[in-house]
Amino acid sequence: MRRFHSPDPYLIIATVVLVIFGVIMVSSASVVESYQATGSNTYYFFRQAIFAAIGLGLWFILQKVDYHQYRLVATLALFAGLLLLLLVFIPGLGVEAGGSRRWLGAGDLTLQVTEVMKLGLIIYLAYWFERKGPKITSFYYTFLPFILMLAVICGLIIAEPDMGTTMVVAGIGLAMFFAAGGSWPHLTLLVASGAAIVWGLILAAPYRLARLLTFLDPANDPLGAGYHINQALIALGSGGLFGFGFGRSRQKFNFLPEASSDSIFAVIGEELGFIGIVLLVVLPFAVFVWRGLQIAKRAPDAFGRLLATGITAWIGLQAIINIGAIIGLIPLTGVPLPFISQGGTSLVFILIASGILLNISRQTIYTKNDEDPFGWWGHIWARFTGIIRRSRYFEKSSTE
Image (cartoon, rainbow, N blue to C red):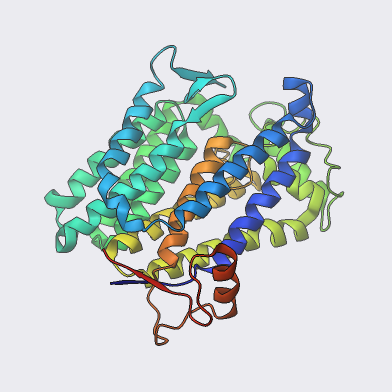
């Protein structure tokens, strides 16, 4: 028998705050891009709102679906992601934009395949590492196949090319391997080989080398390779402590590239200032990662623990990379800010993953005589959703 209790309230609040805030900020950051592309200031806003509604609907449904069911589709999820990664290179199927082939579809109906791959990889690795058990420390039985799998996936993503997503995928794999009990020598070898490969990729591509040199000296070429980061820093610096006010960004008027997607953090800083960034971006992400790690710690089995670790690593690492790039701590990469950046596929799949994480939170192990671990929140949540109708304890049981 498996015990269910109320889902993690802090995770719910952090997710809802980030999604709603993201839609609101897209409405401001995208006005110029939207008008130039469609003739309407609000087109991208309504588009993002629709995807948010779809994503939240799936999020709500999936928090009820027992996460153990994903073991049945783990292999299929991995191969589906690999197939989609291959299809983007087929002329007529893959959509090219900005020199990269990262999408399938046409017009506004496009699918960013790396988002599917991230979720598929997390589900498969959780299933695969759980099956390895004590053999997780074996070089030939586990580490070598894991390295080859990760190399194939990252190789396909870097061929798009998409260096930022490659780093996120590699980071997810590393975090899950560590959580599964991978040995320190293998982890050290993985990090060292990854760093060597990244350095080689930087040297092999002039534009990547230019980004690195710009990172080291942003003022060196302010109208060329350093234009993007300089405009982002101008936006953040202009915002100061309290910002210019919502909707009053100046940099979004064709000064800041990708203002509503990869660079939306700079627009937030310009409009809402440092205080707004901390309260509405950094704090919710910190809460999300904190609760994700707590859920992983209290998961009832290895599959749940690894699944929660992978999802938390995905969202946390991607947020760190995006914010770090915009504030100049790491070289610029084309990685969106989770929940907030404009992009339908990213938002929907991150909400799907968050729904899975929320279901794991409903099965975490607590030692309070089976009492609902979230107290009054359990009352409100259970009555609102109708999941369980009891007067004091809101639990239900299901068989495996």
